[in-house]
Each structure stands twice: as C-alpha cells, then as structure tokens.
Amino acid sequence: QVQLVESGGGLVQAGGSLRLSCAASDRTFSSYAMGWFRQAPGKEREFVASISWSGDTTIYADSVKGRFTISRDNAKNTVCLQMNSLKSEDTAAYYCALYTTPRAIIIGWGDPRLRSWGQGTQVTVSS
Image 1: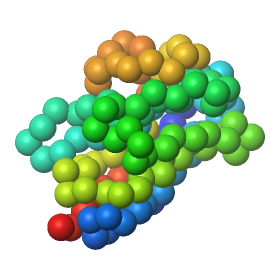
Image 2: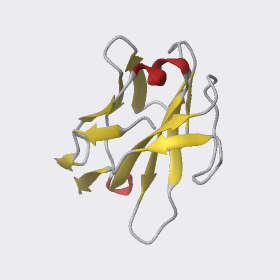
Image 3: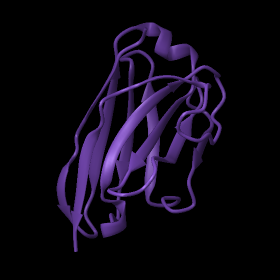
Image 4: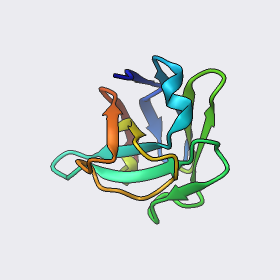
C-alpha cells in the first residue's frame, strides 16, 4: 500500500501563506488522482482540493477557491497545496489522500475511492 507523509504545517497569521507537501512512497502515486482534506476541531473531515493523475485538472471546495492551489510532481512523487490569504477558519489538520481513480473529483471522506492517506499536518491560523 502506498504510504503518504504530509509536511509543511504550522502557525501563521491571518492573511499569511503556507505550503503543504505530501510525499508518496512509490510511483503507483503517478497513476491516480490525489486530494487534500481537512478536519477542524469538532467538525467532520472535508474535501479541500483534488488533482488528476496528470495534473491538468484541479477541483476546489468553494471555501478555498481562489486562495489555495494544488499541484503535483510525478517525477518526485509529491503533491503540494499552496495556501494563500489564510483565514482563521482554515485552521485544521490537513490530510493528503490517494484516489483509486485517475480523475480529479470531489468525494467525501470515507468514500471507497480513497485508496490511502497520511497522518496529517496541523495548520493553525491566528487572527
């Protein structure tokens, strides 16, 4: 099973930026879409962004559209989430996930089309 490890979380002031990275353990990663999800305290884990296997299609949750950018480098087995104009409501643990489909789609956490996921990285935005 592909292992995923997130990094790049931290504490940032509102309006600031962070760049999250997710490293995959093998090249199976390059054949499938990837996604980022997040879970705030007391809330369910929610979809944030998805990118197709080739990187040419991306989809975002309305709450992050225009502020976050998902990208991938299949040669390096990594996917990134650039987060700009951060808000206090972006505070959450962020998880990357490998899909079982090559297409970028919006799916809920627990969907069987999620193959594997990481342990998460915490993002805290202070107001």
